[in-house]
Image (cartoon, rainbow, N blue to C red; front, side, top):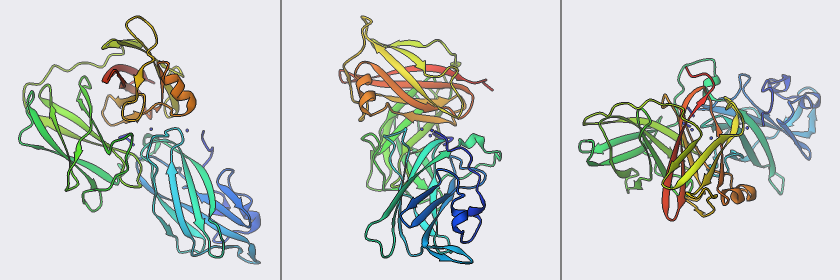
Length: 399
């Protein structure tokens, strides 16, 4: 999600004395928080989370410590294991289609201490899987940890945190309403400003482009074409003049999915703003009727909930002939009224989820980090045609 855009909590993230001791004793090792420590043979592996918690939308180090409990110093305790070849894979279990991250890992200057350079695009539960090749061991040590990441809005400090990437959009010639205009996009590294050229593929595409009018009454989901210089191009006709919101949903290699936002000014007469009004849970577009429902009412803030589109045809019968669109039986885009929070979700891809989708019951897992009014667009393909069905939902008390 753009406020960064896509879950069982670990409980307290407070650190105990273990995390501040240079070399903990066996007694100290035993006091690590549940779920944050693993015993692998003679080794103890402990994940060290910041005392204030882990928040989305910012780059942080999550440290871990590897100790050899067979080597005990009477003063300093178990020995830290140095010269370990490390690898981490970060995934989001409830968002199976989201590309995995392969963050960098560095040593912390103390034997046995290492830092994972993490960035979590949005709140929810993530899995950090570690593979550690220890000198003298024939096989890597492996362990996984679940980390509960809070939404960016939960942080007490409102100081904006720079994101690792940003999207740049330029028009080739003037962008005028009612006329085709070529748009050129660049994904850039925030620190170096260099164009990012290496991406992971998410649902069959490198670049998912989301565009909306400022009032969210107009919406488009497109896929720009990659160019030799690392930029992407797309030709678009905008219906009216005014400011449009542009979101690039991309996954720089090893960094996971990111939704990066900017704006574009289009010349020409502006349309009259359309107010966002919650107008029921049933909508019909191009012969498909969707009954929209949430698993939890009211829709919770900061927690995952299941949003289901029950699809029927013009005869009132379930739609059983959905076709995969971009590798999934549906896509769900959700944008907050302020344009700063964006969710791009896909239905569950397990056996049960696929079976339900084929019956016309397409369920998406979504998380709303703050209250307000949101516009949601469900996209489904049938007979080779993509149908976009919008809804407006209210979460909590709108500001």
